[in-house]
Length: 383
Ligand SMILES: *Cc1c(COP(=O)(O)O)cnc(C)c1O
Image (cartoon, rainbow, N blue to C red; front, top):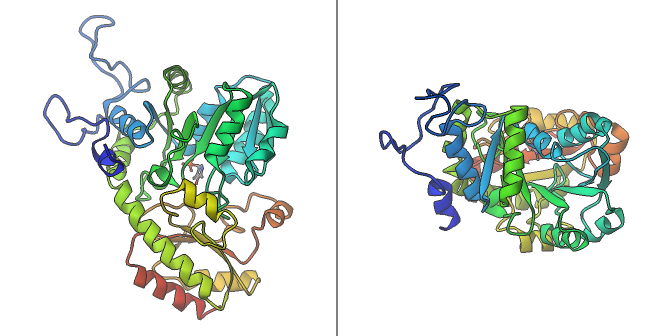
């Protein structure tokens, strides 16, 4: 099956009792047994719920995995991965991670004896000198947020696995989605998503996902999902499954609009720098071109006027773009990382990474690109 068919039909079947084309929302916590231990495959909804099962099967299909898991949030999916480890184990992670991931690593799990090392993954060779006997997990995100740095997934998995094939490589694929890149096919063991973003796609739920291709790893993850209990509910599972079915067609438009806006911004006299992996001037354009089918809908840029006042004037005058956190929905969103999504990172660190007062991040939606460009043009006139 090709990807555009898989999003709709991958691992899906009509509901057996009635033939319903979409799985019903099985809003139930428990399932009747005819005799103790005798049931139809479902006992208690933390272990499994048929609506969630349908979604988890779709999750597996779109990432070319064998098993998928739906969690209460993206962060609870990451939490599950970390629970595979033991005290003293070491994790190597990218130095430009989603803020909540960094917070979980350093403030929730470091105290249980896990050791985290943060490395620039722009060059895969940077990992070699940090790999030790105790390294159990490599965690990477590509493209990164908000500067769209690209890590070469295949090069990293090759280096890590040649050192020790038992080290797990996990990829947060939230920004790219499987429409653009398939980490499991590139050698990764685990794909993670904040399904809150593109997979759900409609800014109407919070959810996380894990996809794997190894039965033993799937068993361990299912045990943790069941034992720790951060599962996705049936209503959210229904909405996310509905979202997945249009992922390919939404992503196509996100990419088209993202491209148009990035190219427009590059030429704009009030713009200093644009961060979009599809621009030839982007530091990792070559890797992006090799690794990704297209370049996505996330575009960041810096204004020439580096004052916060200028950035605020631009953001306050957008009308089609909504000023809000999050990303990946059908509607376009604008965000000021310094005061919104990245406020928890100390200023000194923000400056070191390049997250400055004049940086603006756009999640380009699937509206008509002419309206989006006009909206940006009007907002620029107030800068
Ligand atoms: C939003 C996000 C997360 C966290 O997911 P939640 O659903 O908000 O818990 C993790 N990684 C990335 C890249 C994200 O954008």
